[in-house]
Length: 171
Image (cartoon, rainbow, N blue to C red; front, side, top):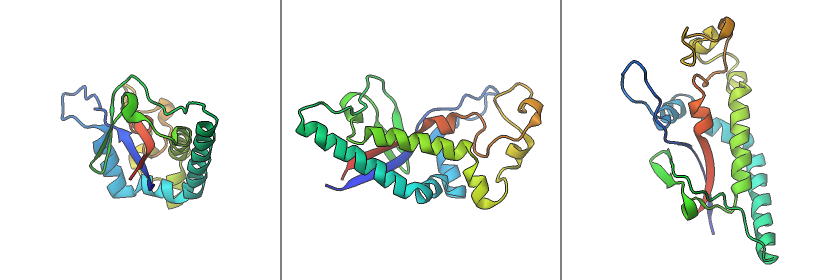
């Protein structure tokens, strides 16, 4: 068994009130990964913790199977699509099952904390985005955060960060 960790996003379209072109979270993820290596940097910094979370989850799954207890695989009735680097993963029912569901959730939570905590900014030593420093955002009618306060880099509408997903698959 060879376990592969995937980091990606739910492929969701951003709404564009101006009627311009449609951009999706996948498009944004690809641009950010190509230009800044956000997910790779996150993985590089957290790989030891991620490996431990996955190992713990697999051990728990094996123990539960040995005791005849079911495993929470995270399979739901909703449907969506994970996509990054050309890989798609349908998220519905049995197709979404994973033996590392708990670890997946911890990875997703850690990634969000990584972004909202400004860890990429700390790594580079300065803000990556002039728009973030100026407090520009598409979330408000004025186009700025309240008081024009700086916002974290890579968080404009928040859709990219909330769409982030981690999952494992057997290869």
